[in-house]
Amino acid sequence: MFLSIGWILMSYLIGSVPFGLVMAKAVCGVDPRLEGSRNTGATNVSRLCGTRYGLLVLALDLLKGWAPAAGAMAFSDNWFFLSLVGLAAIIGHISSPFLSGKGGKGVATTIGVFLALTPSALIISVLCCVAAITISGYVSLGSLTLGAALPLFTLLTGKIGFLPVTLLVAVLIYWKHRENIRRLATGQENPWRKKKTQGQA
Image 1 (spheres, rainbow, N blue to C red):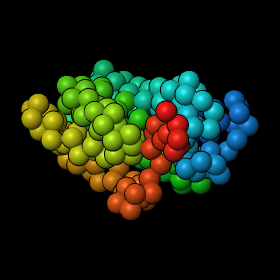
Image 2 (cartoon, rainbow, N blue to C red):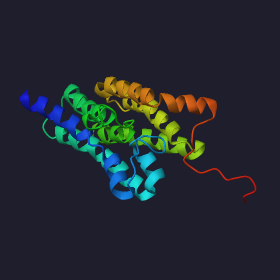
Image 3 (cartoon, one colour):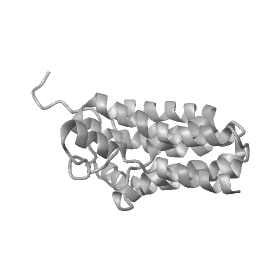
């Protein structure tokens, strides 16, 4: 009981570490909350500081979701407890006490969590995400695709116990991307690939 509660709290704290903010300030002296998309996630850090640093933030945000979930699986196979552990890490990233209750959009940490809990469903969902980004050029559309695909493939791969948490996480991802959805709908979203200017070959 106490171990379970302690692990959930630890998962929240690990998830709440703002690697994007730390990296951006340390490497290029900028606060990602004030520049670019004003988000502490890997995409904004990549835009502000360079791709390699964005990829590093992505890996760290993924790790802070995977490590608590994988650790919990070492001593428990209870889907409800494991779901709470994963959800705690994701909520920590989205609503960090180190950022006054603010945070990132939770996609990388979600990938880390479900890489541990439902690897088959996660891998298929990530492939869908990558395909959406490649075709459209929008990272946000890929994230939304991931959020929609994860519950579906969790169900199809037989991990039904984790279906409720994947549905809840999908709602969180869509809520955190509500401004991106609005910009996508109005054609104002910034693409991942820079568009060629007129007259350029």
